[in-house]
Image (cartoon, rainbow, N blue to C red; front, top):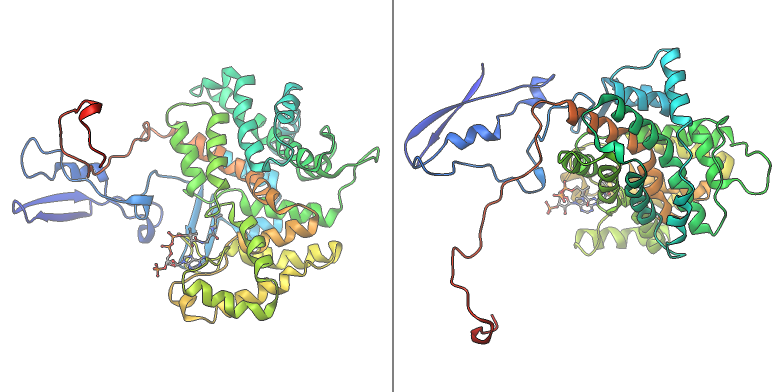
Length: 436
Ligand code: ACO
């Protein structure tokens, strides 16, 4: 076995630490953090830890779901390149692939779609939960809360060790997330909620629940339905990102998947993660015109602003999802008419990619740079964009959850800390204390 020899210069002792590999030796080489604990100055020492705020160089799990090569701009689900899936597959098939590890046969696919479709209806009381939200509540806050509220309807879901119970919750969460997301949209718009139509596709049904008005039957526009389906494929999973990590951390306490998914959605809400799609539109509106782009880039370089939708912890190349989305925008605009913000976004990208600030830091457009422009052209308000990200990401969160439960290496997630506070002091009664 390959190993690392570490000499502790405090004691002169040398330790052999085994090196472990994943599928690709080039990317997955790691040492076990716990092996460092043997490195001590004295027998009663705690032992050495690795200090890694924000997990910039720590693997929290072994995973066989998603592979990213950030240097080369590669993304694969279960080994399949994202470009092939976006071109040839559909979201329901990709969700099956993420959860089960293989593409479904025709029979498996039909059973999967049937089960998810027949779990789209939510309990009638959920309407009361929605009625409790203020008229201008952010749709993500409604989605996060109602995902957690599902837990109260399905207490048996806490039995996470039972594979059948787990699969039932996977069907329910994949089915109900489109209904809850659409209810959040209708609440924002002040419109009555729409029942699912089980004759439509998964995405078509989501569109139906968002946009059906007085017509007897909603028929989704096939170009927009396919575009949204491709966007769902692109957003389905992204290995150990902030929200997947939140899902895993919360679920590691054996919490039920509804509360864990609510935690994951909360992590996605932040503007540095899935909330960036909303922030990009705000930024483009603030810039306002192509001739203001240079000034905005100057502000970014002077650290007065962030170029939202640019940069990524893992990608140091063009995000492959952003490439597909940029192409998709043209197809959507054929139906909806051009969103004028696209020209501003393209100009911003062009100038940024010529500028040494962005080139030297390897900052490229990420998945959120162009997606909001498409959602807006389809008729969604910007506060709703992160909800449309969360809907397909549910399949990734559930795949990560299932993998965590089945992984014998996993325990409750509980990081260490490096304590830097006061060592010890005596308690003082309140009347003797001085303000510090
Ligand atoms: N605009 C301007 N400068 C940036 C940007 C940006 N969008 N992103 C990174 N930088 C700079 C940083 O200031 C830093 O510069 P320095 O080394 O001179 O201090 C350098 O590039 C490295 O960036 P970090 O912040 O260290 O990178 P990190 O991996 O911690 O952050 C993140 C990644 C959060 C995505 C960051 O690039 C960012 O804030 N981007 C804008 C928000 C965004 O688009 N988020 C969506 C990401 S995709 C997703 O989550 C679905």
